[in-house]
Length: 450
Image (cartoon, rainbow, N blue to C red; front, side, top):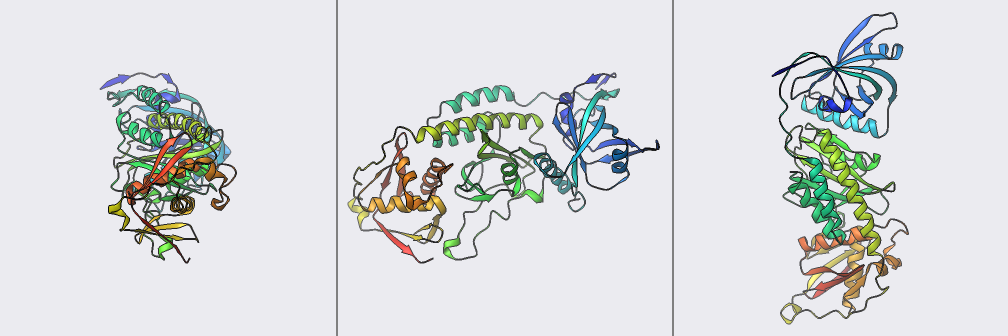
Protein backbone atom coordinates (compact mmCIF):
# COMPACT_ATOMS: atom_id res chain seq x y z
CA UNK A 1 0.00 0.00 0.00
CA UNK A 2 1.29 3.46 -0.82
CA UNK A 3 0.27 7.04 -0.07
CA UNK A 4 -0.01 9.58 -2.90
CA UNK A 5 -0.30 13.32 -2.64
CA UNK A 6 -2.55 15.64 -4.62
CA UNK A 7 -1.74 15.73 -8.36
CA UNK A 8 -3.44 16.70 -11.61
CA UNK A 9 -4.04 13.85 -14.06
CA UNK A 10 -5.59 13.12 -17.45
CA UNK A 11 -8.94 11.40 -17.81
CA UNK A 12 -7.27 8.62 -19.84
CA UNK A 13 -5.15 7.71 -16.82
CA UNK A 14 -8.19 6.83 -14.69
CA UNK A 15 -10.51 5.05 -17.13
CA UNK A 16 -10.60 1.99 -14.87
CA UNK A 17 -12.59 4.09 -12.38
CA UNK A 18 -15.41 4.43 -14.91
CA UNK A 19 -16.38 0.75 -15.23
CA UNK A 20 -19.40 1.12 -12.94
CA UNK A 21 -18.08 -1.24 -10.26
CA UNK A 22 -18.18 1.52 -7.64
CA UNK A 23 -20.82 4.23 -8.17
CA UNK A 24 -19.55 7.77 -8.59
CA UNK A 25 -20.45 10.42 -6.02
CA UNK A 26 -21.71 13.58 -7.73
CA UNK A 27 -22.03 16.94 -5.97
CA UNK A 28 -24.15 19.75 -7.42
CA UNK A 29 -25.39 23.12 -6.24
CA UNK A 30 -28.70 24.87 -6.79
CA UNK A 31 -29.02 28.38 -8.20
CA UNK A 32 -29.48 29.58 -4.60
CA UNK A 33 -26.22 27.93 -3.49
CA UNK A 34 -27.69 24.90 -1.69
CA UNK A 35 -25.39 21.86 -2.19
CA UNK A 36 -26.52 18.29 -2.87
CA UNK A 37 -24.59 15.01 -3.19
CA UNK A 38 -25.77 11.69 -4.59
CA UNK A 39 -24.54 8.42 -6.07
CA UNK A 40 -24.69 7.97 -9.85
CA UNK A 41 -24.78 4.38 -11.03
CA UNK A 42 -22.78 4.97 -14.19
CA UNK A 43 -20.15 7.41 -15.43
CA UNK A 44 -18.86 6.56 -18.90
CA UNK A 45 -15.70 7.59 -20.68
CA UNK A 46 -16.58 9.36 -23.96
CA UNK A 47 -13.18 10.68 -25.02
CA UNK A 48 -10.11 12.30 -23.46
CA UNK A 49 -12.11 15.42 -22.50
CA UNK A 50 -15.67 14.21 -21.92
CA UNK A 51 -17.66 11.80 -19.75
CA UNK A 52 -21.34 10.88 -19.71
CA UNK A 53 -23.47 10.39 -16.59
CA UNK A 54 -26.59 8.27 -16.60
CA UNK A 55 -29.75 10.34 -16.20
CA UNK A 56 -32.40 8.03 -14.72
CA UNK A 57 -34.57 10.09 -12.39
CA UNK A 58 -36.05 13.57 -12.29
CA UNK A 59 -34.29 14.47 -9.04
CA UNK A 60 -32.71 17.31 -7.14
CA UNK A 61 -29.41 16.57 -8.87
CA UNK A 62 -31.09 16.96 -12.24
CA UNK A 63 -32.68 20.27 -11.24
CA UNK A 64 -29.35 21.58 -9.95
CA UNK A 65 -27.44 20.64 -13.09
CA UNK A 66 -29.93 22.43 -15.32
CA UNK A 67 -29.72 25.52 -13.11
CA UNK A 68 -25.97 25.39 -12.42
CA UNK A 69 -23.82 23.28 -14.81
CA UNK A 70 -20.75 23.19 -12.53
CA UNK A 71 -20.40 19.68 -11.04
CA UNK A 72 -17.86 17.88 -8.89
CA UNK A 73 -17.56 14.09 -8.88
CA UNK A 74 -15.60 11.53 -6.87
CA UNK A 75 -14.64 8.23 -8.52
CA UNK A 76 -12.76 5.26 -7.07
CA UNK A 77 -10.54 2.73 -8.79
CA UNK A 78 -12.02 -0.75 -8.07
CA UNK A 79 -8.56 -2.39 -8.12
CA UNK A 80 -6.32 0.04 -6.22
CA UNK A 81 -9.01 1.91 -4.19
CA UNK A 82 -7.43 5.20 -5.30
CA UNK A 83 -9.87 8.13 -5.30
CA UNK A 84 -10.04 10.96 -7.83
CA UNK A 85 -11.96 14.23 -7.95
CA UNK A 86 -13.31 15.41 -11.30
CA UNK A 87 -14.36 18.96 -12.14
CA UNK A 88 -17.16 18.76 -14.71
CA UNK A 89 -19.26 21.14 -16.81
CA UNK A 90 -22.66 19.96 -18.05
CA UNK A 91 -23.07 20.40 -21.82
CA UNK A 92 -26.14 18.49 -23.05
CA UNK A 93 -28.38 15.44 -22.70
CA UNK A 94 -28.58 12.79 -25.44
CA UNK A 95 -31.68 10.59 -25.54
CA UNK A 96 -30.83 8.55 -28.65
CA UNK A 97 -27.87 7.51 -30.73
CA UNK A 98 -24.63 5.61 -30.21
CA UNK A 99 -23.62 7.09 -26.84
CA UNK A 100 -27.09 6.63 -25.38
CA UNK A 101 -27.26 3.00 -26.52
CA UNK A 102 -23.78 2.24 -25.18
CA UNK A 103 -24.61 3.70 -21.78
CA UNK A 104 -27.99 1.96 -21.77
CA UNK A 105 -26.36 -1.44 -22.42
CA UNK A 106 -23.77 -0.99 -19.70
CA UNK A 107 -26.39 0.25 -17.23
CA UNK A 108 -28.58 -2.77 -17.98
CA UNK A 109 -25.70 -5.05 -17.05
CA UNK A 110 -25.08 -3.26 -13.76
CA UNK A 111 -28.80 -3.18 -12.95
CA UNK A 112 -29.22 -6.90 -13.60
CA UNK A 113 -26.11 -7.70 -11.58
CA UNK A 114 -27.39 -5.74 -8.55
CA UNK A 115 -30.99 -6.97 -8.78
CA UNK A 116 -32.34 -3.55 -9.82
CA UNK A 117 -33.30 -4.26 -13.43
CA UNK A 118 -36.71 -2.63 -12.94
CA UNK A 119 -35.24 0.44 -11.26
CA UNK A 120 -32.36 1.50 -13.51
CA UNK A 121 -34.16 2.88 -16.57
CA UNK A 122 -32.04 5.29 -18.58
CA UNK A 123 -33.75 8.58 -19.47
CA UNK A 124 -30.72 10.11 -21.15
CA UNK A 125 -26.95 10.41 -21.30
CA UNK A 126 -25.77 13.67 -19.73
CA UNK A 127 -22.54 14.77 -21.43
CA UNK A 128 -19.97 16.74 -19.42
CA UNK A 129 -16.68 18.39 -20.30
CA UNK A 130 -13.88 17.35 -17.93
CA UNK A 131 -12.22 20.52 -16.69
CA UNK A 132 -9.80 18.76 -14.38
CA UNK A 133 -8.85 15.47 -12.70
CA UNK A 134 -7.17 15.48 -9.28
CA UNK A 135 -5.88 12.60 -7.17
CA UNK A 136 -7.37 12.66 -3.67
CA UNK A 137 -4.59 12.05 -1.10
CA UNK A 138 -4.76 8.69 0.61
CA UNK A 139 -3.45 5.12 0.53
CA UNK A 140 -3.87 2.86 -2.47
CA UNK A 141 -3.03 -0.71 -3.43
CA UNK A 142 -0.49 -1.71 -6.03
CA UNK A 143 -1.99 -2.40 -9.45
CA UNK A 144 -1.20 -5.94 -10.68
CA UNK A 145 0.62 -6.19 -14.01
CA UNK A 146 -1.51 -6.53 -17.14
CA UNK A 147 -2.22 -10.11 -18.15
CA UNK A 148 -1.42 -9.40 -21.81
CA UNK A 149 0.34 -6.80 -23.95
CA UNK A 150 -2.58 -5.79 -26.14
CA UNK A 151 -0.44 -3.65 -28.45
CA UNK A 152 1.80 -6.61 -29.19
CA UNK A 153 -1.27 -8.81 -29.69
CA UNK A 154 -2.61 -6.32 -32.25
CA UNK A 155 0.71 -6.23 -34.08
CA UNK A 156 0.82 -10.00 -34.37
CA UNK A 157 -2.85 -10.26 -35.34
CA UNK A 158 -2.56 -7.57 -38.00
CA UNK A 159 0.33 -9.33 -39.71
CA UNK A 160 -1.48 -12.67 -39.74
CA UNK A 161 -4.76 -11.23 -41.03
CA UNK A 162 -2.90 -9.60 -43.92
CA UNK A 163 -1.63 -13.03 -45.01
CA UNK A 164 -5.15 -14.46 -45.52
CA UNK A 165 -5.87 -15.02 -49.20
CA UNK A 166 -9.64 -15.55 -49.02
CA UNK A 167 -12.57 -14.72 -46.78
CA UNK A 168 -12.95 -18.26 -45.52
CA UNK A 169 -9.37 -18.34 -44.21
CA UNK A 170 -9.82 -14.84 -42.76
CA UNK A 171 -12.81 -15.90 -40.67
CA UNK A 172 -10.92 -18.88 -39.24
CA UNK A 173 -7.82 -16.80 -38.59
CA UNK A 174 -9.45 -13.97 -36.68
CA UNK A 175 -11.33 -16.39 -34.43
CA UNK A 176 -8.13 -18.31 -33.75
CA UNK A 177 -6.23 -15.08 -33.02
CA UNK A 178 -8.80 -14.02 -30.45
CA UNK A 179 -7.87 -17.13 -28.51
CA UNK A 180 -4.11 -17.26 -29.05
CA UNK A 181 -3.28 -13.54 -28.88
CA UNK A 182 -6.06 -12.07 -26.73
CA UNK A 183 -6.98 -15.01 -24.49
CA UNK A 184 -10.67 -14.85 -25.45
CA UNK A 185 -12.42 -18.22 -25.49
CA UNK A 186 -15.90 -17.35 -26.78
CA UNK A 187 -16.27 -15.32 -29.97
CA UNK A 188 -18.56 -14.90 -32.99
CA UNK A 189 -18.33 -13.20 -36.36
CA UNK A 190 -21.50 -12.14 -38.16
CA UNK A 191 -22.14 -10.38 -41.46
CA UNK A 192 -25.17 -8.42 -42.68
CA UNK A 193 -27.75 -9.82 -45.08
CA UNK A 194 -28.59 -8.21 -48.40
CA UNK A 195 -31.12 -5.68 -47.07
CA UNK A 196 -29.01 -4.85 -44.01
CA UNK A 197 -31.75 -5.65 -41.50
CA UNK A 198 -30.31 -8.87 -40.09
CA UNK A 199 -26.92 -10.44 -39.48
CA UNK A 200 -25.97 -14.07 -40.04
CA UNK A 201 -23.30 -16.15 -38.34
CA UNK A 202 -20.28 -17.06 -40.47
CA UNK A 203 -17.97 -18.26 -37.70
CA UNK A 204 -17.73 -18.88 -33.96
CA UNK A 205 -15.46 -20.45 -31.34
CA UNK A 206 -15.92 -21.76 -27.82
CA UNK A 207 -19.53 -22.95 -28.05
CA UNK A 208 -21.10 -26.40 -28.02
CA UNK A 209 -22.83 -25.57 -31.32
CA UNK A 210 -21.30 -23.29 -33.97
CA UNK A 211 -24.61 -21.66 -34.91
CA UNK A 212 -23.40 -21.24 -38.52
CA UNK A 213 -26.24 -19.66 -40.46
CA UNK A 214 -28.19 -18.46 -37.42
CA UNK A 215 -29.46 -14.90 -37.61
CA UNK A 216 -30.12 -11.91 -35.39
CA UNK A 217 -31.97 -8.67 -36.14
CA UNK A 218 -30.48 -5.20 -35.94
CA UNK A 219 -31.19 -3.76 -32.51
CA UNK A 220 -31.34 -7.18 -30.79
CA UNK A 221 -28.76 -7.81 -28.06
CA UNK A 222 -25.29 -6.29 -27.98
CA UNK A 223 -24.62 -7.52 -31.53
CA UNK A 224 -27.74 -5.99 -33.03
CA UNK A 225 -27.29 -2.70 -31.16
CA UNK A 226 -23.63 -2.45 -32.18
CA UNK A 227 -24.66 -3.01 -35.80
CA UNK A 228 -27.59 -0.62 -35.73
CA UNK A 229 -25.69 2.29 -34.18
CA UNK A 230 -22.24 1.51 -35.62
CA UNK A 231 -20.67 1.67 -32.18
CA UNK A 232 -18.95 -0.74 -29.77
CA UNK A 233 -21.24 -2.07 -27.04
CA UNK A 234 -19.62 -3.43 -23.88
CA UNK A 235 -21.28 -4.95 -20.81
CA UNK A 236 -19.25 -5.94 -17.75
CA UNK A 237 -21.95 -7.69 -15.68
CA UNK A 238 -24.64 -10.25 -16.36
CA UNK A 239 -27.62 -8.60 -18.10
CA UNK A 240 -30.87 -10.40 -18.82
CA UNK A 241 -31.70 -7.58 -21.26
CA UNK A 242 -28.96 -8.70 -23.65
CA UNK A 243 -29.13 -12.51 -23.50
CA UNK A 244 -30.02 -14.05 -26.87
CA UNK A 245 -32.88 -16.18 -25.59
CA UNK A 246 -35.28 -15.03 -28.28
CA UNK A 247 -32.75 -15.70 -31.02
CA UNK A 248 -31.74 -19.16 -29.80
CA UNK A 249 -35.17 -20.62 -30.31
CA UNK A 250 -36.38 -23.80 -31.92
CA UNK A 251 -39.07 -23.32 -34.53
CA UNK A 252 -42.62 -24.16 -33.57
CA UNK A 253 -43.98 -23.55 -37.05
CA UNK A 254 -43.94 -25.61 -40.21
CA UNK A 255 -40.89 -27.24 -41.72
CA UNK A 256 -40.22 -24.28 -44.02
CA UNK A 257 -39.96 -21.96 -40.99
CA UNK A 258 -37.20 -23.81 -39.12
CA UNK A 259 -34.31 -21.74 -37.76
CA UNK A 260 -30.76 -22.47 -36.67
CA UNK A 261 -30.29 -21.97 -32.91
CA UNK A 262 -28.11 -18.98 -32.06
CA UNK A 263 -25.01 -19.85 -29.99
CA UNK A 264 -23.82 -17.91 -26.97
CA UNK A 265 -23.30 -18.37 -23.27
CA UNK A 266 -26.47 -19.01 -21.29
CA UNK A 267 -25.38 -16.40 -18.73
CA UNK A 268 -22.66 -14.15 -20.14
CA UNK A 269 -21.23 -11.85 -17.47
CA UNK A 270 -19.15 -9.83 -19.92
CA UNK A 271 -19.92 -9.03 -23.55
CA UNK A 272 -18.29 -6.81 -26.15
CA UNK A 273 -19.61 -6.33 -29.69
CA UNK A 274 -17.65 -4.28 -32.22
CA UNK A 275 -18.87 -3.32 -35.72
CA UNK A 276 -16.69 -3.87 -38.79
CA UNK A 277 -16.83 -0.65 -40.79
CA UNK A 278 -15.26 0.29 -44.12
CA UNK A 279 -16.04 3.61 -45.75
CA UNK A 280 -19.11 3.94 -43.57
CA UNK A 281 -20.43 0.56 -44.72
CA UNK A 282 -21.23 -2.15 -42.17
CA UNK A 283 -19.37 -5.34 -43.09
CA UNK A 284 -20.06 -7.32 -39.94
CA UNK A 285 -19.90 -7.50 -36.16
CA UNK A 286 -17.26 -9.18 -34.01
CA UNK A 287 -18.64 -10.27 -30.63
CA UNK A 288 -16.77 -11.76 -27.66
CA UNK A 289 -18.18 -13.09 -24.38
CA UNK A 290 -17.06 -14.39 -21.01
CA UNK A 291 -18.64 -15.97 -17.96
CA UNK A 292 -16.40 -13.69 -15.86
CA UNK A 293 -17.48 -10.26 -14.59
CA UNK A 294 -15.39 -7.33 -15.83
CA UNK A 295 -13.53 -9.49 -18.34
CA UNK A 296 -13.33 -6.74 -20.99
CA UNK A 297 -11.97 -3.33 -20.02
CA UNK A 298 -11.72 -0.04 -21.89
CA UNK A 299 -8.29 -1.22 -23.08
CA UNK A 300 -9.78 -4.45 -24.43
CA UNK A 301 -12.43 -2.40 -26.20
CA UNK A 302 -9.77 -0.18 -27.79
CA UNK A 303 -7.81 -3.23 -28.92
CA UNK A 304 -10.81 -5.03 -30.46
CA UNK A 305 -12.04 -1.86 -32.18
CA UNK A 306 -8.61 -1.62 -33.83
CA UNK A 307 -8.66 -5.34 -34.67
CA UNK A 308 -12.14 -4.93 -36.19
CA UNK A 309 -10.86 -2.05 -38.33
CA UNK A 310 -8.00 -4.21 -39.65
CA UNK A 311 -10.43 -7.06 -40.24
CA UNK A 312 -12.87 -4.80 -42.11
CA UNK A 313 -10.12 -3.59 -44.43
CA UNK A 314 -9.14 -7.16 -45.25
CA UNK A 315 -12.77 -8.25 -45.73
CA UNK A 316 -13.37 -5.37 -48.15
CA UNK A 317 -10.19 -6.17 -50.08
CA UNK A 318 -10.96 -9.88 -50.37
CA UNK A 319 -14.55 -9.24 -51.43
CA UNK A 320 -13.30 -7.01 -54.25
CA UNK A 321 -10.69 -9.56 -55.32
CA UNK A 322 -13.27 -12.35 -55.40
CA UNK A 323 -15.14 -10.52 -58.15
CA UNK A 324 -12.07 -9.88 -60.31
CA UNK A 325 -10.25 -12.17 -62.72
CA UNK A 326 -12.82 -14.99 -62.88
CA UNK A 327 -14.41 -16.12 -66.11
CA UNK A 328 -18.06 -15.35 -66.58
CA UNK A 329 -18.94 -19.00 -66.97
CA UNK A 330 -17.23 -22.22 -65.91
CA UNK A 331 -18.51 -25.39 -67.53
CA UNK A 332 -16.50 -28.39 -66.35
CA UNK A 333 -18.60 -31.53 -66.33
CA UNK A 334 -19.69 -32.93 -62.98
CA UNK A 335 -18.28 -36.41 -62.25
CA UNK A 336 -20.84 -39.10 -61.53
CA UNK A 337 -21.15 -40.36 -57.94
CA UNK A 338 -19.24 -43.53 -57.16
CA UNK A 339 -20.96 -46.85 -57.83
CA UNK A 340 -21.25 -47.57 -54.11
CA UNK A 341 -23.13 -44.33 -53.53
CA UNK A 342 -25.18 -44.18 -56.71
CA UNK A 343 -27.97 -46.37 -55.39
CA UNK A 344 -28.43 -44.45 -52.15
CA UNK A 345 -29.99 -41.20 -53.28
CA UNK A 346 -29.92 -38.33 -50.80
CA UNK A 347 -33.22 -36.45 -50.80
CA UNK A 348 -33.13 -32.65 -50.78
CA UNK A 349 -36.35 -30.67 -50.61
CA UNK A 350 -36.70 -26.99 -51.58
CA UNK A 351 -39.42 -24.58 -50.42
CA UNK A 352 -39.95 -21.70 -52.84
CA UNK A 353 -41.57 -19.39 -50.27
CA UNK A 354 -38.31 -18.67 -48.45
CA UNK A 355 -35.78 -20.77 -50.39
CA UNK A 356 -35.30 -23.12 -47.44
CA UNK A 357 -33.62 -26.45 -48.20
CA UNK A 358 -34.02 -29.66 -46.17
CA UNK A 359 -31.74 -32.71 -46.35
CA UNK A 360 -33.34 -36.07 -45.53
CA UNK A 361 -36.05 -34.16 -43.66
CA UNK A 362 -33.64 -32.01 -41.61
CA UNK A 363 -33.39 -28.25 -42.02
CA UNK A 364 -30.20 -27.09 -43.74
CA UNK A 365 -30.36 -23.48 -44.94
CA UNK A 366 -32.72 -20.81 -46.25
CA UNK A 367 -32.83 -17.38 -47.88
CA UNK A 368 -30.16 -16.29 -50.33
CA UNK A 369 -27.82 -19.12 -49.32
CA UNK A 370 -30.65 -21.61 -49.86
CA UNK A 371 -31.41 -20.16 -53.29
CA UNK A 372 -27.73 -20.38 -54.26
CA UNK A 373 -27.51 -24.00 -53.13
CA UNK A 374 -30.62 -25.02 -55.04
CA UNK A 375 -29.34 -23.35 -58.21
CA UNK A 376 -25.98 -25.14 -57.87
CA UNK A 377 -27.70 -28.47 -57.30
CA UNK A 378 -29.91 -28.10 -60.36
CA UNK A 379 -26.89 -27.12 -62.47
CA UNK A 380 -24.98 -30.10 -61.07
CA UNK A 381 -27.81 -32.43 -62.02
CA UNK A 382 -27.55 -31.02 -65.54
CA UNK A 383 -23.86 -31.97 -65.62
CA UNK A 384 -21.88 -28.97 -64.28
CA UNK A 385 -19.62 -28.75 -61.24
CA UNK A 386 -17.52 -25.58 -61.81
CA UNK A 387 -18.97 -22.13 -61.03
CA UNK A 388 -17.94 -18.49 -60.58
CA UNK A 389 -19.02 -15.71 -58.26
CA UNK A 390 -19.68 -13.52 -61.27
CA UNK A 391 -22.21 -15.84 -62.90
CA UNK A 392 -24.10 -16.13 -59.60
CA UNK A 393 -24.15 -12.37 -59.29
CA UNK A 394 -25.54 -12.08 -62.80
CA UNK A 395 -28.18 -14.79 -62.27
CA UNK A 396 -31.57 -13.07 -62.30
CA UNK A 397 -33.31 -15.95 -60.51
CA UNK A 398 -31.23 -15.30 -57.36
CA UNK A 399 -32.48 -11.68 -57.17
CA UNK A 400 -29.28 -10.37 -55.60
CA UNK A 401 -29.15 -6.60 -55.07
CA UNK A 402 -26.90 -4.59 -57.37
CA UNK A 403 -25.00 -3.11 -54.41
CA UNK A 404 -23.63 -4.88 -51.32
CA UNK A 405 -24.91 -8.36 -52.14
CA UNK A 406 -22.40 -10.01 -49.74
CA UNK A 407 -22.19 -13.02 -52.06
CA UNK A 408 -18.76 -14.15 -50.83
CA UNK A 409 -20.00 -14.27 -47.22
CA UNK A 410 -23.07 -16.23 -48.29
CA UNK A 411 -20.88 -18.79 -50.03
CA UNK A 412 -18.76 -19.17 -46.89
CA UNK A 413 -21.90 -19.64 -44.83
CA UNK A 414 -23.13 -22.28 -47.28
CA UNK A 415 -19.76 -24.05 -47.37
CA UNK A 416 -19.58 -24.25 -43.57
CA UNK A 417 -23.18 -25.27 -43.14
CA UNK A 418 -22.75 -28.10 -45.64
CA UNK A 419 -19.61 -29.28 -43.86
CA UNK A 420 -21.58 -29.48 -40.61
CA UNK A 421 -24.91 -30.87 -41.78
CA UNK A 422 -24.42 -32.41 -45.22
CA UNK A 423 -20.81 -33.55 -45.82
CA UNK A 424 -21.86 -35.32 -49.02
CA UNK A 425 -21.96 -31.86 -50.66
CA UNK A 426 -18.67 -29.96 -50.70
CA UNK A 427 -17.91 -26.46 -51.98
CA UNK A 428 -14.23 -26.09 -52.89
CA UNK A 429 -12.45 -22.90 -53.88
CA UNK A 430 -10.63 -23.42 -57.20
CA UNK A 431 -9.35 -19.90 -57.89
CA UNK A 432 -10.14 -16.23 -57.47
CA UNK A 433 -13.90 -15.95 -57.70
CA UNK A 434 -14.17 -19.60 -58.75
CA UNK A 435 -15.37 -22.72 -56.94
CA UNK A 436 -16.46 -26.31 -57.46
CA UNK A 437 -19.47 -28.22 -56.10
CA UNK A 438 -18.41 -31.77 -55.35
CA UNK A 439 -21.25 -34.28 -54.88
CA UNK A 440 -20.30 -37.54 -53.22
CA UNK A 441 -23.70 -39.18 -53.28
CA UNK A 442 -26.57 -39.57 -55.74
CA UNK A 443 -29.20 -36.87 -55.20
CA UNK A 444 -32.94 -36.64 -55.46
CA UNK A 445 -34.16 -33.03 -55.76
CA UNK A 446 -37.77 -32.24 -54.84
CA UNK A 447 -39.69 -28.98 -55.12
CA UNK A 448 -42.07 -28.69 -52.17
CA UNK A 449 -45.19 -26.63 -51.87
CA UNK A 450 -44.90 -23.55 -49.61
